[in-house]
Amino acid sequence: MTVEKQFADLSVPKYFQYTGCKVNSFRLSARTEGMIDCTVNLMGKKEVVSGESFDTTPTDLGHTPFDSMDATIREGVSELATVTEIDFTLENGLDGGNYVIDRTGQRRSLPVGSCRVTGNVRAVFEDVTLYNKAVGNTETSLSIEFKKGNGTGNPAGNEKFTLYVPELYFSPNAPVVTGPAGVVVELPFEGFYSNDANSSAMYAVLMSPSSDTQLGLV
Image 1 (cartoon, helix red, strand yellow):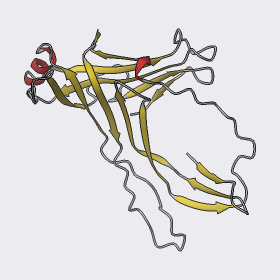
Image 2: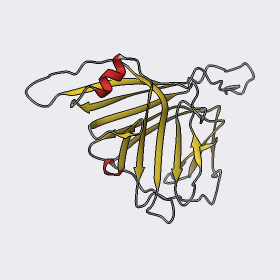
Image 3: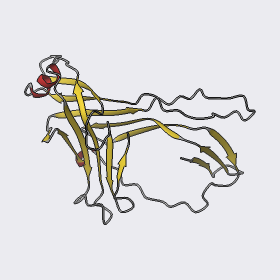
């Protein structure tokens, strides 16, 4: 992909264009309060500083952020109502060292390394269901859904974004008693692809007025 940063407030406007970009890592974090954090780390092949924009008439798709009140978390087919924090991380392991001696100063390519999907679930400790799955090395799945309105995507105000890790294992991590308050358990997990119907270790589905198609991440 091509990414551009615009600095229009300079005395002479400048546009930093990055071509040949790929996603090196992606992280989504949800907490009980506030907006949902999403971080995307990009790596590109070439930087060009220009006096003109790559696209002089860009389309503004708007910005309707999701917050924690829009979220539903599921483990398998069951809704998890005890989660206080959840993180999803995708790492593509791009090789950024492919510079060659060609007088351009740019990368020749960005080969993808071994993909890794990891995360962490922090939940109020009310039963041993998730803990037993971790100890028993039982395969399961996780998803987080953010929905506004009816979630059909149209018209605006009915957007829905769902992130899936269809195959994963929890790592055993005993509940911690830190004091007289409630007890929580933190369970790291690692996703993988074995036989999921979508042939993916992580994938997302976006429903919005501008796009109602499935967006595969891995």
